[in-house]
Every structure is written in C-alpha cells, then in structure tokens.
Image (cartoon, rainbow over all chains, first blue to last red; front, side, top):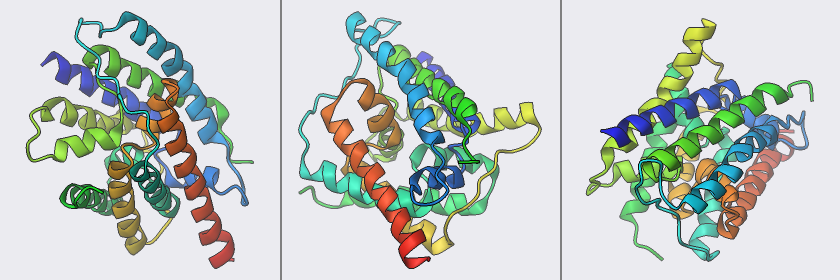
Length: 137
Length: 141
C-alpha cells in the first residue's frame, strides 16, 4: 500500500513536470528534433533540469544503498551495448520522430481527451505486446 | 528560436527529476515509463499495483495543472492517424526491445552514467532528428 501511494505520488509529480515543461505537446518535441527548421532547444533544458536532481540524487541513493523505508534498490545491472539495444533505440527513434510522442508524454496527454492520443496509446501497447510475443534474438 | 521556453522547461525538468528520485528512494524502482507500462502488461505480473498507480499519476498530473490554470495543456498532433498508429507500434516495440525510453535511459540512465543508456539516448535522439529531417525537409519540402 505504501509503495502504491508513493508510486502514485511520483507519477503525479512526473506528469506535472511533463505539463509545465510542455513536453506533453508533440509540437514542442518536434520543435527540438527539427534541427534544420525553427529549432527549439527547450528539451535540452528539461533534460538538464531533471539531471540536476537525478545525478546528485542517484549518487546519494548509491551511497545509502537502500530506499528511505530501508528496502533494496533495484539497480539495472547490464552494461553491454548489444544488438537489441541498438535496434530497439533505432525503432523507438523512428516512432518518436514521426509522432513527437515518447511513452511518458503520450500517457500524460491522454488527460487532454484528444482521441488521437488514445490511438497512439493503443498502438504503443500493441507494439509492447507484439514484442512480448516475438522470440528473442 | 522564438518558441524557446527555457524557464518552464527547466522547472518542469526539475519536477521530472524529483519524481524519478522519489520513485527510486521510496520504492526502489527506476522511473522508466516504457518499463513500468510493459511490466504492467505482463500476464504473470504480480506487482501491477504500483505500476498502475504511477501511470494513473501521470494522467492526473496534467489535470492538476489544468485545475490551477483553468485550461488543459495544448497537445498539437504532428501526424495523421495512420502515422500515429505506425509511430505507436514503433515506440512500443522499440522501447521494449531497447530496454527503455526517454525517462529510463535519458533521465535515470544518464544520471547513473550508464554507457548503455548513453548509447541508447544518442541513438534515439539521432534517429528521431534524422526522421524529422527526412519527413519535413526532404519529403515534405
């Protein structure tokens, strides 16, 4: 129950951050990706703001070795740059460039009630299910 | 660069970073949204509760801002419905195959100085920028 409430609160703050930074708006994201057009570097500032918190915060977390309630932290363990990572990041980049949506903003943007966002969301879930059904290579 | 909004961008970024740190220090989980959603879809998932709570929070965030401002945030679509379907499939499949998206690799992975996340982030930003270039300046010109 405590974990569920904490996760809900973290999601809420994340969603407020995506809204205030306008990353919820695909036009804003495409404005960053369109380096040859009317370039909008806002996304760089969003990443910088986030890293200002996560870089020192993660050093603190690593030193402390456990969560505030005292449980284990599930650090990702892999370090290899393998074919699935490269291919997956490439496919994601294609979809991100076409739509201006990555997973977080797409989920937050559902709140606006724009029905086309739900179309993207259903297709994204279908892509995830498809990945689960295909054999690993 | 008349659309540049550095102050709200940086403030929003601080909140995104704070949310990622909150999730890590309160639950021990990395705030990778594709991983949180993908894990919630697993037929054998035993930890759906916190995953759905985080995703519900993500949807409530813009509504909380809308309550304060009196207006929903703008979402200006950048492609057609078929384009959204293709992009959605690519984003869903690609983020699972590549073990992460802008949040997991971009915000959390870079903060851990992970070479894997740096490579993934460089690739998806590079490919996305190249895609926009081709769609807007080669095909669409």
